Length: 252
Image: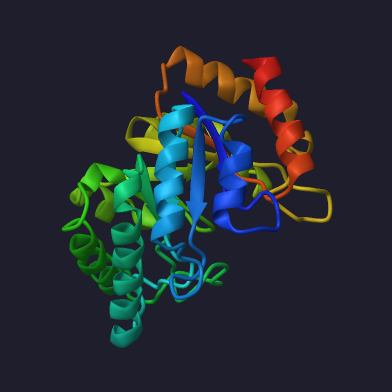
């Protein structure tokens, strides 16, 4: 198992973050929030390749958050597919272990309810993901478990033989038991995302804010099942990363 974190720990560009992180972690989740503005140029890509080789680092790519791959608006759906494909093309020299995508119920996170026509929603998602896997193998495309019952999108994931990015930090936030998710999806998961949630509801914080027993159970389970993917500590602050790394290493 590789321990990673995000490329947004310090308030700086991607490359300076990765330079600081390279000695600390095994993998960096490269976050492209906006493919129009966040994509580093060729010189930075060359330096990211150098860091990868110098530190035996790996990368995972998180594709743009504003890509709406199952949108009922066809123009918006196609624009989302284009953004994801551009992100994948940018990252090709870095050979990411995984390419994480979101499939929203509507056009963004926290949609209040599933679409009225689930079959049509799944068909739109399927068409988008089929186009994306023309660029990378299906097993390298990870559909993230975000803020709804993953069983809704599971038929598409299985039909296209895609991988999964299992956000266990969100499961803990929403007080969902980890064992059923891990039992069902670990074999298909390339990436697990873990983070804590503060009492005020703010997630993506230090694992000091996660139930210690759950974190301990997870790490023991991953070791027992010989998980060889990436455990991403999906936090965005140096102190949150330091505390989370210390906890994981003390329990591993």
